[in-house]
Amino acid sequence: MTRISTENYLIPGDEPGIALHIRRKHRADRAPFTPASTVLLMHGATLPAESLYDVAVGQGAFMDVLAEAGFDVYALNVRGFGASTRPAGMLGAPDAAPPQVRTEAAVRDLGSAIDHILAARGLSRLSLIGMSWGGTVSGAYTAAHNDRIEKLMLIAPQWLSDGPPRIDPGGVLQAYRRFDVRAFRQRWLEGVPAHRRDEILPPEWFARWAEVMIASDSGAQDGIVRAPAGVIQDVREYWAVGRPFYDPGAITVPVLLVHAEWDLDVPLPRMQALFQRLNNSAYRRWLEIGEGTHMVVMEKNRWQVLDAVVGFLTSAGAPRERAAASSDVET
Figure 1 (cartoon, helix red, strand yellow):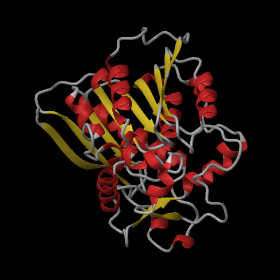
Figure 2 (cartoon, rainbow, N blue to C red):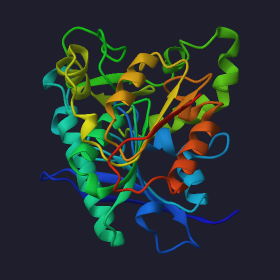
Figure 3 (cartoon, one colour):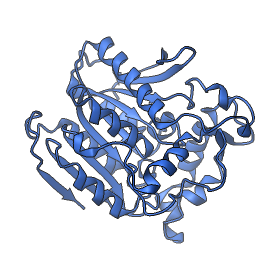
């Protein structure tokens, strides 16, 4: 197997005292990298980047598969996640501060990471992958900075809901949520037929994921980690009341949407509505994966996500400058 080089480092955020963690993986025998071969991964609202993109199960960690395929792969933790700075409001009791890490701050952190990578590699653009809330962060950044993005891939991204999303527990929001890692398996697999659950998410895969999750928070206690609650405040102010956080119609780069059949957090009609709004992308594609949940990137059928991402990144497609949309849907 080709040797994969791994780097972990911090870059400054856009505010004093904020440092952002970046993990980089690439083949030691590949250089230099181009906009088409440089990829940045953005995580969701609860889980840090390493728990989505760097857990070695099945075909291998998401980052490793992309690196093996010849990509220069970066994963970002925005403030409040992983080894990035926890805002002051996350250091005390949950009820001692308002909801921390709003989406707008995450978009700025993503911008800081993109600025760093492009400057460090001497590039003008890179490709971007965002999952769930990370799809909102990535979509919002791209809508404002199409010139800096080569291609955009959104895995189970947020979109407008017709009621409170599952992530919203109701009641008064505190600074952060206390997330019970080991108890999450039941909620994760809620939409999966009971007799298929160990097949879709093998217990040993979940155990490996849980280890990475717990290790991501230096303040974890008894398997409980901290997750900023700002995203839920944004859900209430935007998605749950029919108010988009960003305009998908402002995105002109090629877009891939990936969604799974049993995703209860982002039901199928939301993906259709978002796909239709991406009508100014150079070209757009929607892949619907059977037998997967919101966390399909960590499940049995994750290989379909990986194949789709690699195929989309390596396809020449239509000219990047073309703004008129062509589209196809795969199921």
